[in-house]
Amino acid sequence: MRVARRTVVLTLIVSAILGAGVSLIVESGHHQASRPLQLTLALGLVILLIAFIGALVHYHYSLEQAKRNLDEAQSLALLGSWERDIPTGRGYWSDNRYRLFGLPPRSKAPDLEEFYQLVHPEDRQRIKNTVSEACRAGTGYEATYRLADDRQHRVFLSRGKVVRDEAGKPATLVGTTQDITEKLQQQRLTEDLLRNKDVFISRLGHDLKTPLTPLTALLPLIRNLSASDRQRELIDICASNVSHITDIVEKTMQLARRFPPSHRPLVWESIVLKGLVDSCIDQMSQVLASQAIEIKNLVDPALIVSADRSELYEVFGNLISNAVKFSPSGSRLNISAAPGEPVTVTVSDNGIGLSEEECSQMFDEFYKADTSRHALGSAGLGLSICRQIVENHGGRIWAVSNGKGLGTSVSFTLAQGGAS
Image (cartoon, rainbow, N blue to C red; front, side, top):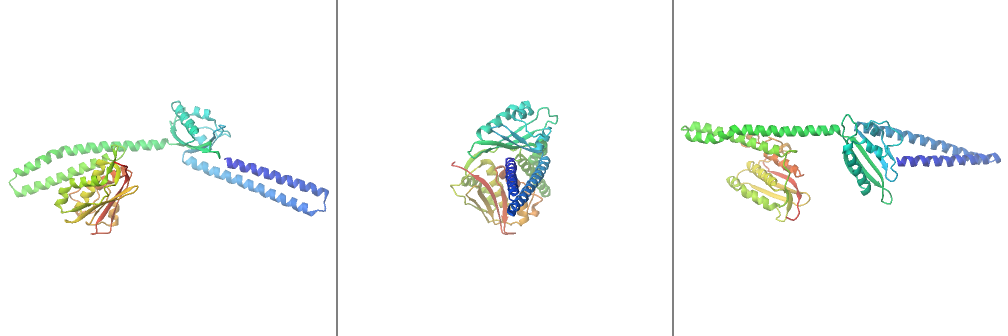
């Protein structure tokens, strides 16, 4: 707005100078009519004046067109813009800000006190303090408020930023105001749905585990009492299915607990990564020995990451377990980490390998790369749990493979930690 005012003033000054020049030349021509040069100059200045006025009209039209386009865009976004001169208190509101507040547009924007009277009494003092502190400190701010006597009970988000003058002093406060009522309603609806999801999964898990518990305990006893090999075989099939269902229930509940907003807050600490990996390998030593899998921890002993210890332990447990399932007996796993910000951790195997499509889908819920194993043996949720844990840490996880039979590498990122 300031630039537009300066341009108009400059245009008027130049026009006045050109007009004065034309007048002087014409007046000079009256006394010396034999001089055609004066008439040529006068004509040139008149043409220049007309061109300048035309440029002014075109500029004014372009400015009005840009203002209409901006107003239309703000209307679609339920947004209004504003600015206020800090020393004088004079301000400007876009047309759509007036409309958001249910006011007719006017040439002079409401002063601060008028604006504060529009704010809901319960929010008024907080907004006053926020704006005053921003002007005093020369910083920006973000605040929500309601309007007084607003039957729609709308909520507005105001963002402001202090613009400094050439001397570095706060000169102008500029910002936007947006109606975020619908956005907040959608956010609350989403949170309600997520809470209902958590309640549903919790109740479903409880209802499924209740009948599974006696089955888990009784099937081995029934097997011991059975005298027929065929009966024992059928009981083993039942026990295997019960174990599989129990695993699905447990993993589903684990995954649900890690989705926001229900997941527990992370307990951040600086962790020596090599030590945590060693501990996880020791915990899984029997599984590794049963498949004759050799595992190497190649992580630098000096590398420290910032993470939740128990959650990170879960990630390594699931990744190692998944690699063992899909690696041939006698093969090798490597765990390495590239320092930096973020740290990139990689678990590599020389197992069945994956296609590009399988690499992109393997972290989806209930996805299994080996279709022959869909019947039993895995809930298909371990890698989904890894993904959610890593994302809760602010990182990402992905898989790379050179193709079938050429092994797979799963990598994920973590924040680098300080001294432990």
